[in-house]
Length: 82
Image (spheres, one colour):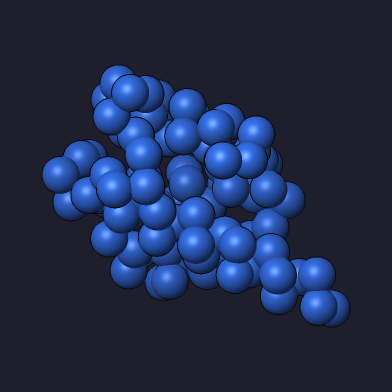
């Protein structure tokens, strides 16, 4: 796991008001307080940590925390291609 991913998981847990120990790739978002406000906050958090902007529509379709990190990797690789 990259250092950025650890920072993401810690901030993500704080935002969702759950224990950081519960946040891993398999965390099912629908079992948390994941809603449109959380999506917006996560976009800002991803921008802050990874310096990349993810589309809100794609982010809102994520099912797990692992899906979010996969989306971040995809958007980061797109940015590197530019």
